[in-house]
Length: 175
Image (cartoon, rainbow, N blue to C red; front, side):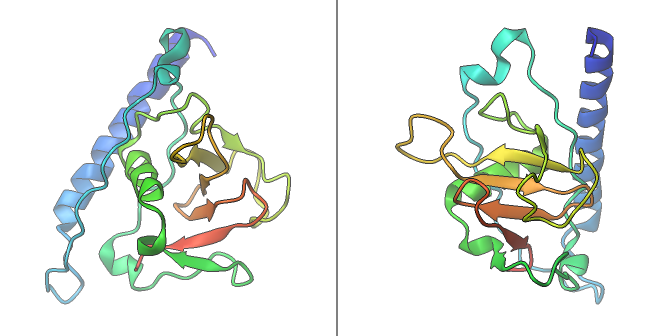
């Protein structure tokens, strides 16, 4: 990809992030009955490591669809009923930090964050190549990326793995 295409991709990612932020602000956390829902504080962002911009450019991953609104979250349905799910609130704080970075479009602490996840293990629902993207969840005390990841799908679904793709749980955003 040449530098012009990278710039266009980066601008598109930024615009999508701004549009998602505006949509979230316009939604205001209201449910369909007009009652205000409780909002959780934003996740703290992890500091970007020097590897995030190695070579002078940061990778601009294809963003996932924006998170579902609070009204849509009440109607959340797992993408694959055979796949276990986990409440968002039960994830480690570092996973919540990563989810916050994904929602904001970065910056990500690792150069390989946002790359295409190929689902070679076949543990996620079968989709076309490029549908899934993976993001590192920082593991305290680990000298490398560790084994924890969040994988996102093209329509906004999110999956958690603590064991480097040996198993997955779909993240339930309602809890």
